[in-house]
Length: 311
Image 1 (cartoon, rainbow, N blue to C red):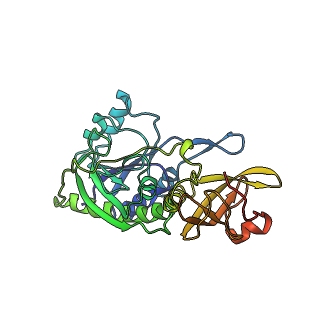
Image 2 (image 1 turned 60 degrees about the vertical axis):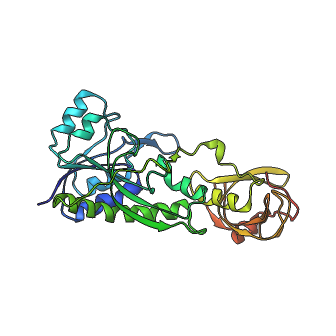
Image 3 (image 1 turned 45 degrees about the vertical axis):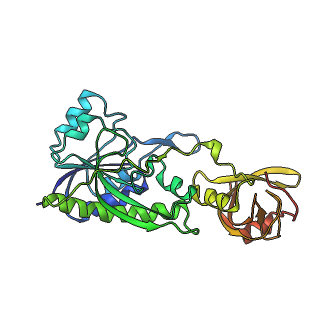
């Protein structure tokens, strides 16, 4: 028998899980997502979330309350008579009344190897910290921040060529597969839960604007991880001088090299930049109001002389 599921999610990361649960034949009685946001150049249009768009495509009822703290919203949620709620990057905290309403509680697909990287930006933080691996965990939610017991785990390596965008897509698909398996086990009373360890806890705070600027006075490895971990959004950036004018440029991908030079100095004509130790070769860049491009394409219209210093 299919489970009665309330799905709660908002961005693209959530969509594969929604589609996978629907394809598996579960009865998704409602989708909760973030409200439509102002969009367009003047902010006059309202843009629905990716989850709302897919839910409507699949014929699923959609709700987008601004908060779930009110008694009326909690009563409406309870009337759905759900077996379980599946939560993937929803964006709102779930009060106890919501967590307790479904018969089997609420299960979250979280993109880290808990208890490492609880919180908002686990993918970016894992890359920037130099972790060798990451993954997705299916967790039964409790009132804490990503503190509930874990049901299933999927793992993947973090290699130097993986950006946050690449890991985002990889973990999104992995999480969808795991959630379907978790719901199948829950349906047959085979799902086992394991409490999280109290050791190795790290918090993945939101990425602030203050930490997006590239600091060339760090090691080449740290600079490369910083660039890859913030690619493509919000993007690590520096300022480059073109025609005596400094312009902000996002660096979307880079590779470590062994060439030595001063921190921030352009060492070669193919964009090898000196760091505190070693250097990085910038391979993908994006100027403001321009498309992302390979370094070779970027250099066709933007000359950076060897010896120039980036800031």
